[in-house]
Length: 183
Image (tube, rainbow, N blue to C red; front, side, top):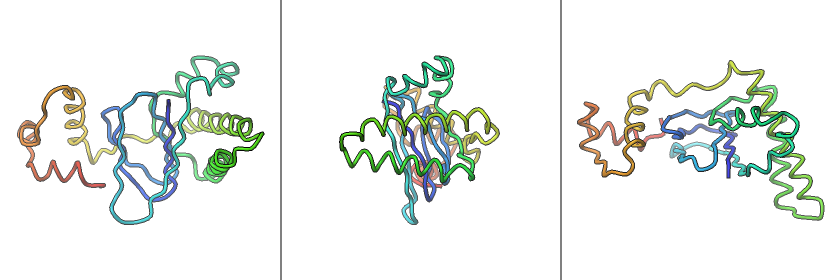
């Protein structure tokens, strides 16, 4: 399945597609099916996120109306910030989806389908018309990004902390701290 990850409160670092992003409230990530990803939250503070999983077939109505190219563009792994004036709207849709998924009465499935379509259309609108708000990778973590890319490309081999630190000319403790730290 594919996944939406929406940061409601707090912040976190997200590692996806061998890139590192810093997520803040209002940020939404579209993670394609099968994509390896991990979130790291600080040890303190309030952190709330909403995760929604969905399948390709859940995009059938969108595909019929907007076309395959639009869906393919939508599903590209990307982090966007939902504009502040649209956050309440997006969060209300997500809250209704959660409510209906827990209620499970005779019309819940249909309502969840309709609400999901509304959410996807809102996200597509934000992607298309608010493209200047696409989040760039956290440039503070450029070196760590290179390390993460190296690890991603060598996942099938034994990769040791000391060797990676030496390869990238950084201390073992700094490297360990960066991969275990939320900042």
